[in-house]
Structures are given as structure tokens and as C-alpha cells.
Length: 207
Image 1: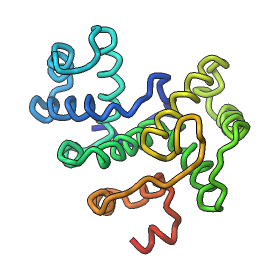
Image 2: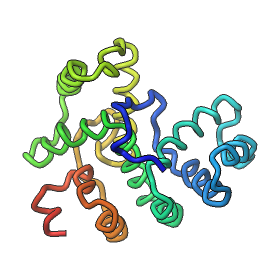
Image 3: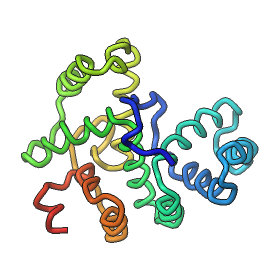
């Protein structure tokens, strides 16, 4: 499995989505096969999944494989057996590990606003964040307006699916519901990641 420290400043895909059913299925196959090539072959021929075209399945598999690779084997086992809400939040955790842009957006903008009591995101705030990262990282700077628009829509939709936003169009920031199981999971692995769930330092210390 990959480590977040090894990731470059990778940008989220414009097709970013939570996809819990597909993620659980791919995790199950991998935990049986322990080989990503075999996992891919089985998934692409799996009649249960909703993507009917081969190209669609390939895109979905590539995205989900990358996110699941952010987990250790024990974390994958925990993910496979979690309920739907926890699976969504674990997918969110994996995406934040795999996409530093997404992690920074959540920690530097959304969490800071939420903790300060400002729960409404304004359009210009994403533009400011993008410009800031563009001045630091060529991975952002080299993207055009069309890519920026696509990534923005995908990120906002993804965050709405995990209930960080009220909806993809109603950009009210809210803290997702975190189960005791998820808290125990993060205490074992890395409690600092509780910050992506918009918890304050004081709340994290109390945990």
C-alpha cells in the first residue's frame, strides 16, 4: 500500500465520486486475490456492477484502486466490514490521503471557516485557494480554466456526498456524523486525520 508522504501534489480527478458499492467490491476482490492486476481483471468482468461499458469500468477501477492503495491491509479489512456511513467517510479519508489538494482545501479553508463559526462557503474562496496553490505547485498552475471548473464541481459533489457540504449547490459547511468505530479506527492509525472531519484541536484532544 502507498503512503501519503510519497504522493506528489496530485490533483483530484474530474470524475471524483464516493462510489461506496464499487469501492467495497474492489476491496473484497483485492483482499481475496492480493494482486491488483487479478483484481482488475475480475472487476472488469463483474456483471454485478452498474457501469455497463468497459471504458467506464476502467475509469472507475483506476480511481478506486488509487484511493484504496492509501490504506494498509488492516485498514482495508476494517473498510470492507464497516457500515455504509463509515465506508463513505473512510473513502473520504483515503481521498484526502491520496489527493493533497483535497486535504489542503479541507484543512486550510473549510475547517478554519467551520471552527470560526462561518459555515457558508463563498465562490471566491475556492478561486483564492486555487490561485494560492497555483503559485506553489506546477500541478495546479499547468491546469486550464476548464480543468479547474471540472475539479471544482467534482470536489464539491464529493464533499456533499460525504456530508461536508449540505449539498453540491447549497455550500453550507457541516461536520459529518462520526461513529465510535471510526474514532477508534483513527486512534489506532493516526488521530491527526480527525481534522478532516472538521473537529477542533480541543475536540481531538478530548478524544
